[in-house]
Length: 286
Image 1: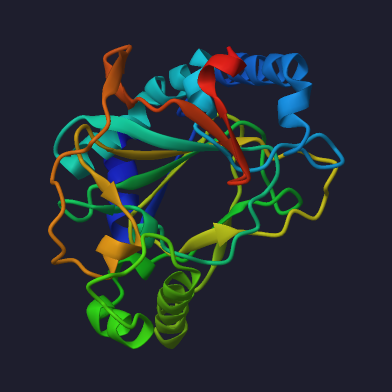
Image 2: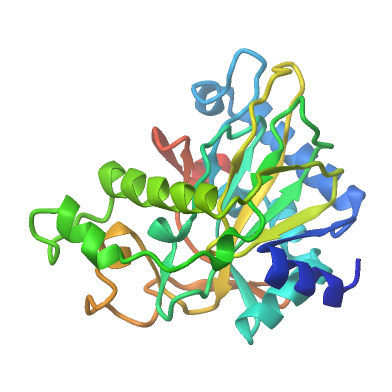
């Protein structure tokens, strides 16, 4: 698929599949590094692994493994689409590493990826295994990125006692918003679709794309993947408090620094988080 066709699919359907975007050898090298880390730090990773040894939702593992950083920069055709969407070079904000399906309900990312200016975010999903209906493929709702806008300030007034003092994290706010988007999608007759991919394929989704994870029915099979949350360098990313209060005064420049990796910028943080249950210093994993 050319950059033009990937771009067209992203704009028209809200997501794009870029076949063979990352060389299989790059994927395999990244996986070797992950396996080596798991063997070297059994005490750390075992608390996150399931009975088959599969890790779940490891945040920013790329900061400890150059192989995962390389997977980001080697996605040249996908990054061309992202660069065009942003109108400037794409940088890596955060990642999620999975070895099994997320099985998440349909949702939009925007409540926790609320950028200033708005819309300066894309999800980029790299398949590190072949993925079909058995091992938890990504689900998308084509066309959901152009559903009518939801009045989030009105919604906030109904949920939060003081709409000017909204917490940055709120399951009540998250569920209310996602429920309304799901309702809109049903009312507009939008269909859900499982996306089957091969190792090295990349899926890019629009910030307003309704997506989720299908059931991972064959638990023995892994579904290794790297979700990359990308923005232009310097764009700040906010959460529920800013999403539900768009007029809130916040800095318009990101508060984190970046490292340069093969001519792309990667945000610098100091921890790897395992399933939002515990975090470990990057230095302990090197």
